[in-house]
Image (cartoon, rainbow, N blue to C red; front, side, top):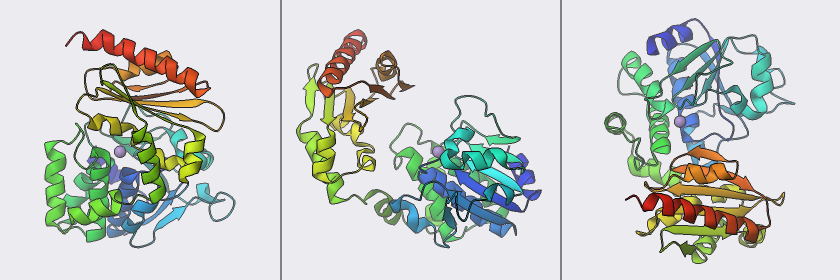
Length: 333
Ligand SMILES: [Mn+2]
């Protein structure tokens, strides 16, 4: 697969690198890692993201290469620019969000570089995918390191390291393979400072976010003999803390800090009157089965759904459904 990717890159010069909307560390790290490699090959890469680079990842763009998608100005004619369009860390064109119409109208060959695949990619002339890879950045390292020689330039090494820590939750998740650890070790030997990367990517909270999390945790309910930890937030809570929607990211995990908790949940009010549910399971309980009851989904250990309001009604339905699922599954162990 990497040889195929290399020959695809060899055949093109103006290569547009994009990732899914609301890019994460793997999307940004992969775009930057590839851009460094393409420059090394004498190519002319561009990176365009929508809507913007998250604040905690901006330091990775040491050369100022990343452009924010501007459909009415700078990027009105984006479709006409590239010789090849590469979507990284996603393999469904609609995940480009605002850039999707440009992607659909370009005459350039379109390809994806990705590792999480629900099904075979559609909408591309070429696909470079490996579902066994932990992060898209892993594919960039495997492609570029043998061809560039070591050490990689430090900004490139830091971009790839950011990919790895983003998709493994700083090496906490079950996808933290031996290979990913060996790759991280290589990158550290090439100059990456793990504490510096960790602090710059993870320790970037605002007081508003900490206030919101404190409020959610203080009011957390424990049900089912402490096995279900549920947090509930209203729009008023968000306003009172001065928090934004982004501040909810990863909050749902917090109840799993408790030894007794098997299932963690977060319910929050949406501006349209609906209620968003997120559930996480440590291991034993299939939370996807619960979310499916409400028309949502995800996977066994992480799932979500949207319910009708008002909150007390949604909360009662969720509590009953989770307790029933826990009764069903925890009785087996
Ligand atoms: Mn990824």
